[in-house]
Length: 476
Image (cartoon, one colour):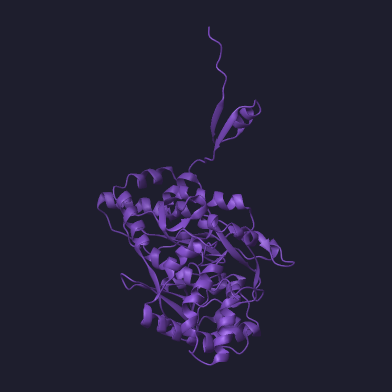
């Protein structure tokens, strides 16, 4: 009888019991991070896997996203860009009414009402929204727009206008106010309203003049191209936009000079140059423009929107039309400003997770290891996050590459089926708003969507696949 062969290495999948025992005997152990599919999804996963449309549909959806080039073509008031009228308010995330609105969303709406002259004091707006008789709330996404944090847009606010060079489709986003006590974080004090009025009266018109001049003289600013460069310069285009902001200033500053009063121009340049997040409001609509190209792709399981209103977290997929799949927004885990702590933070809020949906932001943390000083975690965590997101995506974006990972493209095209099969949730890095209206920003951190929204979307996709196989109904 031959002697037993010594075990030199072990590959362990799942629970660590065997791995720990082997390691204790000086055996080389490779641990595979594996989890079973999400509970209750087996039948729907099988149905979706058997949908003959799925593979080709996902290929078309991803290709459509990757083909989009977002260009900056204009800056105009929301009343002109979106047709917003007095009393109409846009907000981030899936649909919600005032009675369920979070503190920061309420604070932003109150400040927006005062900005538009609907009330003299923001505090007086509570009764206005409670009555609902002369105001309406609608998601930014429903108007081809996105808004960071509370995402409140009112008619007088100025909007970036981005256009796909090939199709002429457009998306929109407001101008970035900066960090701290700002409207999008739910603050509405006098300094907040004063800043917003200056942005409407001075900054917006100056940017319009500059953007139009650049567009007419040398062609519109290539926002997708800036994103490509900034990812190789240490930005991830969600919570770090320093290089992107400076490149935007490079492109617009020559046209800004001479666009108006020298004092106003100097103030505008100081404002933009001192706000590292200024480019975020261009990155977001660029991502939405790309993802909207995949909407309506029957049979596709790709996510085209992730958005939060501070109460609910919602996703939409390419194959389910405009239907939202929602669950409770989660509290971020991260770093806090000053004396603030977890008890002061509101659950996750904002449309800015459109960046992760498109493959940047939290999905591209490996491009911006310095981001961990703002949102928490470590440099190895940042690298591991980008690698892990490849497990739940349909492909890579060759234009948006990660130098430290041998210029591998960012993981792009979140697949509902892969999320349910692996139990790996999309990673988002985000700012944190105070839970009480009027407070403003309290920190920044990392968060994931509520797990239950992906099985909900999968169930609907499975239902559509079954209907298709039976020749019943059509796409959502």
